[in-house]
Image (tube, rainbow, N blue to C red):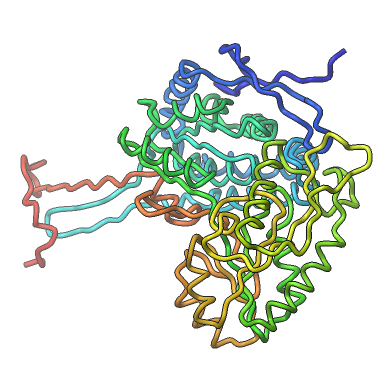
Length: 490
């Protein structure tokens, strides 16, 4: 008997079998075995899913914001009881170690915790001016769609969905077809928490579904996280169709290491940021030749000690990548980097994991003397490929850290240098002696680039201003003076 599961979409608060006749295999990244088949939605199925969400959103929007928040609070408790199960499913399909997978779930829950406290941010403003009253309210958009990557199948969907839901929107998620189980489990838990049927939808698919969502007439806003070229394409499609768009492409994160830095702390931060299936986005930028030599030696020693193994093995430091294509992609960037002049310091590409000959493994690689014009530096690698771009001096490092990236960090014991760097570096997030937590950026023209905080609430709502003119004792007046509220009383 086959153990391969057939997955479904999640529409109207329940699993719905795919109707397109198209499927994709879902693999156990550690063994390469097929563990599930996921349906790939047609454009008609996407239309049906969005229409179902539209109908459900009307009643959901009428709920008091505090009542909506209570659903998210119950969801938080349910997920906390299922973290182990969710992490195991994530590790199986994605290749992260179970511990790292638990971290992905937890970072998603932090977004839900924020969203549960949002109701007070949905308050409007009021101005009383003579006999003209003006007040504003924030109202939901309708249906918000999210297209998310394989890298973080719990965190990124929850980043996008939780604020949209608490603001009164319905949410339609198109997750990666490579690791779809966790989004489906989250959908079921939201229903169990009391979310009305149809308010959260999962429509599985490939590029057909991803292209249909941004142009669907029922979708008011689109969020996208993934490769930068795809982010630009989705943004162009969505905005041309009159949608709000918040499209984020993977960016490089530069970690500047000053001569006075705690070298062990810097190396540990690089390892935490750059290993595993989401690696390849953090570049070390040591300042000065002596710093570079010491950093490369220390990092190389640590990379040679990492245990590469199955995602569920407690001894594993570095699990497999998500697919064979991901392995080929990372290998191609390593080969291109060497051809372009980078020095291959550590090369564990051909690591063998006993008992898992068909798994998607790539051991850690360290490239030194990388330059800013190399593909391995300015393109997404998504694998444990560590790169070092040497800076001649501090000013050079500041310039490098602002190129091809959104995030930057500086490791130093000099508080003045840290403050200067934080002020001057041209990035959206900055860390001091810690890697800043964001690996995605929105490029110019993509609307509101932020994934968290007040900005995402503004993205998920529209402001409405109401002006009222009442004449005492005579009922409403036909037309109000449009500038009355700006005049001083008397």
